[in-house]
Image 1 (cartoon, helix red, strand yellow):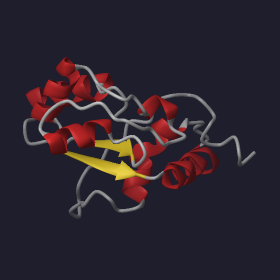
Image 2 (image 1 turned 180 degrees about the vertical axis):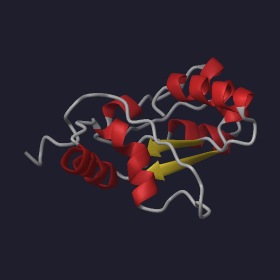
Image 3 (image 1 turned 180 degrees about the horizontal axis):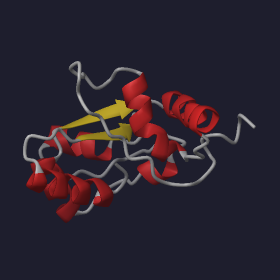
Image 4 (image 1 turned 90 degrees about the horizontal axis):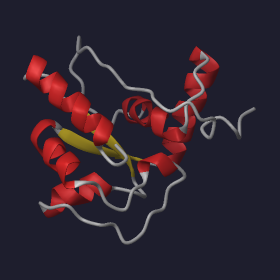
Length: 139
């Protein structure tokens, strides 16, 4: 989720087009900015960050993003760095996609079954960020 701009926009558009769609945000365990804010019921500033996924690690989001996420994002799931590394390597070796750790976060959540899915469910994971930090230790 990072600062929340991308998911705020995607979730808003998706829910306006198809209100029953489920939108799930993914954050690193070591940088749960939006997860902590949701639990607190208000925008919080993290005191520490502990993740290799730098683009998913703001200490605080913006009020506009927070408000849209509260309204349109159904759940927020936390993943570990090792799960994102594994997912980034899978994306590279199986699909030829060089994703940074943040881009592999959704795949990490799905492959570790952190998002409950019903049979026949259509799933989409946004893989963004073209950095190679997710595969740099593999090649």
